[in-house]
Length: 485
Image (tube, rainbow, N blue to C red; front, side, top):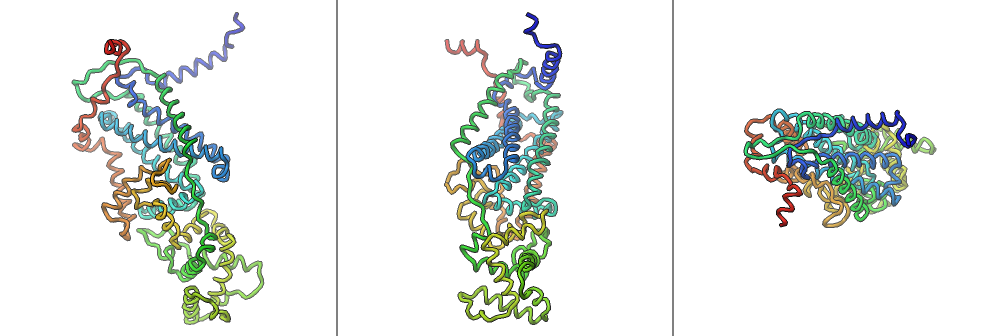
């Protein structure tokens, strides 16, 4: 009966949708292009969509949910495993393009857009680790900040700021990747699947098997879900200043004095550029002390210090150095040293967690920059990373901070070349190591992006003659039956 047919307007919408899909699909392609080698782009898109869905869920539910709730931990694990799959697939996609020289003219811009997108994905991934809310976030943020500072970009990119990192990871970089992906695919759709550059390779044009694309994409998603269920995203609690007070109060006290005396790593930081232009005395000592004192009557030690002569101030600083180094403070019980008074005021605040909260509220746009720099000045982040075998010296950050010799899921194994560069050029002991690493990696990225335009170099992949392996067309059902008989 006619009543069972779709209403006219519904049918029109359905036809319009089918028309759009038909225009998006590539319908005719070389016979070899139905093999999995040419499904990698679709599988990468599948990962991109899954990352968007899981990422939006995580952002909406919040950090407490994804760190403590079982479902939140599972979604976080899906997000991490999807990143692992995404980057692995992109690397395979690049290797296929290299092996088949599919970047030849007129398809060179297809490669350029893809290469730029790949590097944006790597950057996006590290900013994502910085938002996880655990020790990994802290250590990667500090390490990443050193790299950006050495690359002369530290005034604009500050991984220590959670607000900036969130904006970059959730909005700016994803939208840029999506835009470049659209350009990449539009060119791919316009030119069609790359044909063999060798004239002796036989092929025929066939219909695209779109069904197998979705089967492969579905299998990929199912695999990610299973891995995320059995191997959760690792978690080591973040290091807090209050924790260090409980473990080693002398370390916290001596670091406070270094900040006040302008001798800490942050106060003397010069890594190609100096993005930490704030006054460590003000940020780490004076401002939190004055905030505490505003609600507590008593002598203003900071005002007293300011009222002293330069010689008296130097004498106070020297005595404060003796005080923090002493195994017993009984000899200083009757001192009126204003620097010691400020240290003794701040230490209980640091032990209660109030101090860390206060310094991170001083400049909302800087967010966690101050607390992370203070932790870094105590060298506790590097020490913990080393104890876990999780640092840039260990082949980049190939091993995540899960305490196992072989971590599942793995860490940022794609940063292994960074560890190789550090080792080959001895950059870890070089005062300008981050700058040199930035220059080396910057030149590599530029060469990689412009690879199709570099004469002679762009023909190197052809020497390996791997194209025929990929161009081999799958057997037809008739050929398979013939082989069986």
